[in-house]
Length: 368
Image (tube, rainbow, N blue to C red):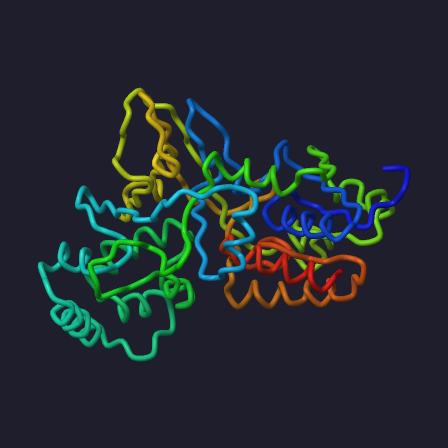
């Protein structure tokens, strides 16, 4: 850590950090990236197993309506034309996701949008839903009680470890509902997955930039701070301030990954298990993200668990209590004039990949 100071020390080699570092280098800045893990890419990291690009930390599908973001990422890799069309498995009954006419037809036998809307309207009225105050009420208002109980309730409570009555309605608003026979999950103009995996894309973003792995910034914070004029911090904001106000809450994930000696295990990249009895939330079959012709396949069963020390934080629990706590940390962060806080953990936000990039490009644009 001696020698000529860097202009920027970027803490974290995930998508936000890689994007900011690339922009800084392009602006002629001297940049060092350090990463606590033994690999770059953050949670988008992919690794080659049996010739298959495995999403180590869960499914990542890039999608955006922003033309500039799409042009930016295509500078570093070629994307395939993957379309996200997950399937829901409820005790062996298979339903199309997102909620579309395919789902409504399978659930109720309806054929036309008018029939589907009438069924949802009647179930909403029967449940007495007015202005939804929690996730359960919002879900019933959107798709009715049958779909809520079969395809939302059990899955959501496994995912968040909380009753749907305790979760904010904003969570379910992210799920698309459409009265068309369209099983494309995302309403995005651009969609795909990097051919060769996300690690290859982020390697290209970090080309020519010094990267040091297995380095924990917070263990030697004062030394690292002396090596650069400014810090870009993408780790947990509460950890940065030594949890002085207490810990923010997250959900974490656990994966059971196995190689199976058959070429096709489930016929789809993602199958959600929406009943309460199945302990995992979904099975990912990785080869269908970036299809390859192999005699074996790799699957990951995904379990949602409450975060604790030493675990990877995935999803911020953005309820009122935790948002209030975050804003207390945010006020401390605003006093750190030489540190930029960014990304999913630094801003305590659930970010899609394109919004991570937009945020990083915006901060880079302000900085130089």
